[in-house]
Image (cartoon, rainbow, N blue to C red; front, side, top):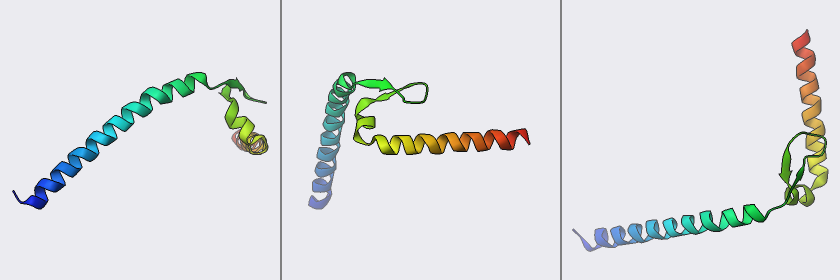
Length: 81
């Protein structure tokens, strides 16, 4: 085995180890953050959503909500024809 092959093998093994540790860390701490995230009822809809997603940009939420309502209405009208 050449020196370059050995170095490449050690580097890829090190990278895989690093990625595994990073993934495990993110999985553990990501769950903590989700548990602490506050939710709220979706305005004008059934279900819940993360409060921070709504608070970051409520204007876009309502624009998207109105677009979905118009689309659903159009689909229902086309189904009855």
